Length: 333
Figure 1 (cartoon, helix red, strand yellow):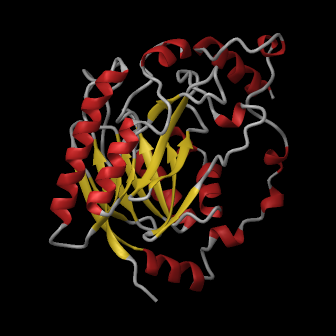
Figure 2 (cartoon, rainbow, N blue to C red):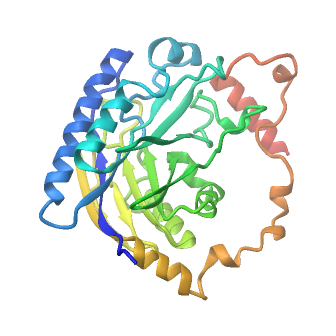
């Protein structure tokens, strides 16, 4: 049996917000250059086969309404950025988890998605659309909330370097999202994040580190977590702590960027063959096998989004105010 062992890289970006579609090209230019650097840096050691970028690396939801996002930044996928990443993947024989883009889809004309793609030499292997949007602020759409949505919400790609799945930023505060990726077969979990201060990689609020390590160990999976490293001047109103990490299936930190804004490339080895052996042979602490699914009645009733009056009168678009109304209704049960 082939032994599957290689290096992965979390590429942490620090670039200005694009304010229109044309400005996105400069971000993609820089990402392509970072990929070249990551491959060159790893060359004397294990070959680099997977590169992960942060949320917002291509574009961020910087406007206050979904109409503005559609008008100025949102794009269809496939697009020129995905095509350029595909060419780079072919050049180096690697897989790339793209930074997130704001996506429009003719099948859902009133909606904008926050989307990342896994791209390999063969092209786009999946699109992941953020399921748990960071409400109330984020005004793009969760595919969960669309009646009649039939595409997989938690896709996993079976590749020559293992089975890869991804979730975006706030998704990781929901153990269920990452558990579903693992249940779908994921062995490597990519975290595409823009995780701001104070919930970063340093005590006393090191949510970033705690969550990455916990999701790895509870799912017996590697985590490659690329965080946004933008400074306050680039992505206000928050500052961004970076701290990109690679974690093994027992929750050990294999590599971590020093906390603080700025570009970083963090590389570590992962061993898919060892992970598969561990999953097959372990009896204790095998949480996916020990899961008593019927015990949790919370999942047997609908929670979010609840119905509110304006939805009954017809969809009027996602907004900060509407998100707050939905949250308050959900809290009341």
